[in-house]
Length: 365
Image (cartoon, rainbow, N blue to C red):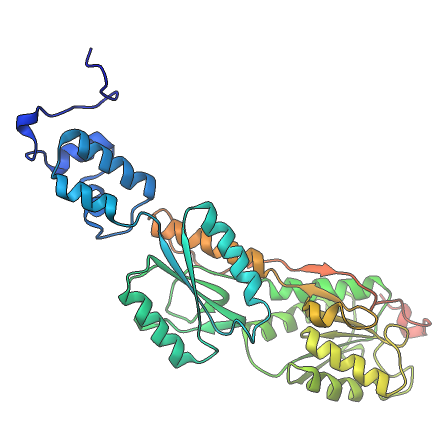
């Protein structure tokens, strides 16, 4: 028995050292010759455990000691960059980073975060620099659900999109909120409270978020048998200014003519609706229930009464994207045909109540 030699090991005699080839090392490690080459030369990212197995096999067989030493000196932790379009200006970037960091830590991966400040030229410069520095993969995140053209600077580096979808012609993994489901869940909550005269204040931009939420709103009210006169859609800027302006337009009517509930594109719009209601001498939710989207805590929890809202899955998107990217880096995942859509979560506070009284048209549905 050859004591001290691992099972299946085929140690070369000392005189044969240096004459071992890639094929022998590959057989010893249980991998392909190309994997041996990538592991020892660093020409492609290889799983840390695979690289270590190759190095041990090469050492046992006495294969080119300088290559083995170089492989051990070479970093064995994948380095991934997350490029976001506004850490300071986008309140949800922290949640995305948190989810991505959790998944990275579990896989022994180093995460770099780069902020473009929303400037696309700056973003392209960051992407070129990251590619030149040889990062193993790149996550590109948006502060709101958008469509992204393929950046030429990334070359063949594995990429995954967060809160975004690829433009036509670019097949790449992406994760985004289920905008349709988010809007439908919000409307179902209002319908469950007894509301049948609804309004949706949405953003004027044409984005996946606006399209998806509008479709979800429409499908929910149509399912309830409501007509346009009882389910209006208004477009404005996605901020408190737009919410105040549109909120006043919707609420400045006699009791039987104004909506009893308003679904808002985001929490900032909802804050503006609160302000419009107060200016008109109305109260939320006594005179009008309000539901937002985002669960922006500095707004939703600070409003009085607290805002019921649909929380977006930012942390979950960050975790999913990092996991998918690391699988691509390791060569174990193929491109997916479309974005993965994650559900939001209804956060119930005190901005929704049943309508004050049920008129004839309120009993419909």
